[in-house]
Amino acid sequence: MKVNGPSNPPAGRRNVIITCAVTGSIHTPTMSPHLPVTAEEIAEASIGAAEAGAAIIHLHARDPETGAPSADPDHFRAFLPAIAQKTDAVVNISTGGSSVMSLETRLAPARALKPEMCSLNMGSMNFGTFPMLDKYASWKHNWEPALLEATRRTVFQNTFEDIETILEDVGDRGGARFEFECYDVGQIETLGFYLKRGLVKPPVYVQFVLGVLGGAGAHPDTLVHMKATADRVLGDAYDFSVLAAGGKQISMATMGAIMGGNVRVGLEDNLTIAPGELAKSNAEQVGKIRRIIEELGLGVATPAEARQRLALKGAHAVEF
Image (cartoon, rainbow, N blue to C red; front, side):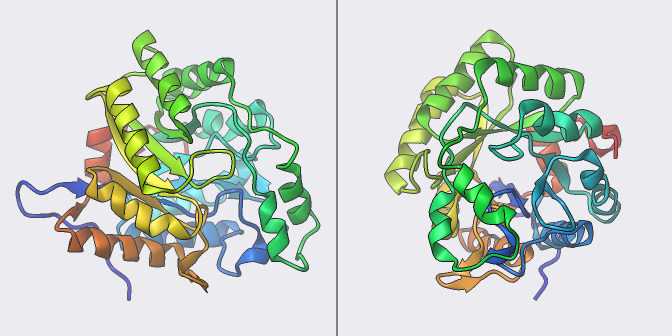
């Protein structure tokens, strides 16, 4: 059943921003027939997620022929207008791309399209997806196992200089605000460093990323520690969201909402809707977390509210 539009809670109750990351660069076509690959599929998935209650759509692109991760601005241009035409959701373009892409490649879409939001990983890290090699006996495309294996020997690189380049080029020049992705407490400290220097300005939107091999684990005590670190380092300058890679997606997001935060779901982060059951769509995951949020007595933020809370420039100021 399609759930249409975010809800408004009674006066005094809090609204939760739902972000949906619809395809990403981690999972591959072999892993799920429901993973959006073509422009039409990514647009349809994004529109469905927005209709189900997502205020923000976090986007990567893929080569429509092979499903391989792509940072070609033309691949983004193939689906962004349809999303903008049929929803008022905030478009958030990744600057992460994949760990095998150079910084210049990763930044090309954001530089060209000037979205309202972009993601920004707050540091270099081992980002291991190679354990997924053990789950599949055969592959639809040769690039799939090759990309997974590459994460055993490569590092996702965002040096201090890289972070400063993104803040300047995409933020100061492009007008984007950021989803600051923090995979461990040290990255929260780095974010605090730039906040004190004035290169990052409030309101700061922090995404606590849990469950990626090489980063913080998806455990309740880890989230509590990351939240306490952010409280100490960022004070009242920030709002936060929670995502967990894999099967703990919904439980950790629920905990984040209970702790006063926002949530992120989507097939980029987790391919299932229940243990052993593939999600048939991004909208299915959005619908599930929305129902939980509303059962907790909370509301779901509209795109307009998300824009106001995060001080975004507005959909009229993008270039797509």
